[in-house]
Length: 265
Ligand code: DGL
Image 1 (cartoon, rainbow, N blue to C red):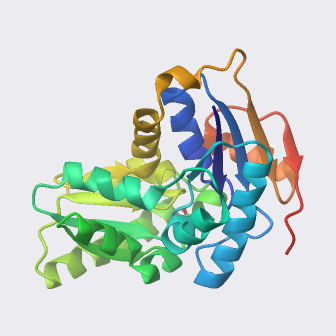
Image 2: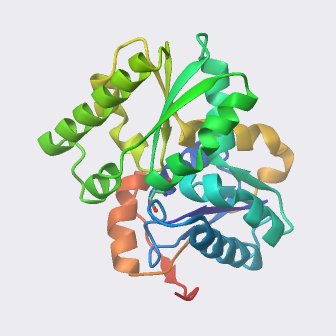
């Protein structure tokens, strides 16, 4: 089984990292559309165009199952991706909402994500389908801070404090009683410890990378997942040197070979 993992850039490597832990015997192809990121500030039509061309590339490279690790692409373009390829496609909004469903007893959840994901209300819709109310908040400054490597940095701590206290205030104003916070962006798992410190203790933090890997492992039959010598191939649409350097931080281990691919503008 060859699993294709797609993200707008490096953040989806947090999902690949969890997949490698849960299903170490599979082959993986990862594509980071680094030339066209960020997706989080773009329109649905543009995200769908970029994401479908990326998905087609992964299938042409032999992917038999696609994990759309990018929350923005999952929120805005999952149907378009499913229409564009003939292999099963799993998006992280669905897995994040499933995890919130399992976690929440009050049925009120908070979601932080990119502006495009929040504007799509994909998380709110997925939560409503599962009889939960969701309050979504865009945190656009977090992606560049993580890409800058400012994880344990006072500026990031202050930005988080402002975003999260606003979110708690909005929850109070809407008379919600949240017990779960979904990290609805690939970059946020890297800030998990800082986020947990900044929110009330009763909020359970859900990392969609982890729950996605668990769902893929459950969905795919273990028997087909054992390649003799499993390999992971990396593709990026912009600088491979930058992908190697920044990507290692998200993957948690060095990345050796990265191939440059041109998917157009
Ligand atoms: N991968 C995107 C997401 O999960 C974040 C980065 C971007 O905006 O492209 O929403």
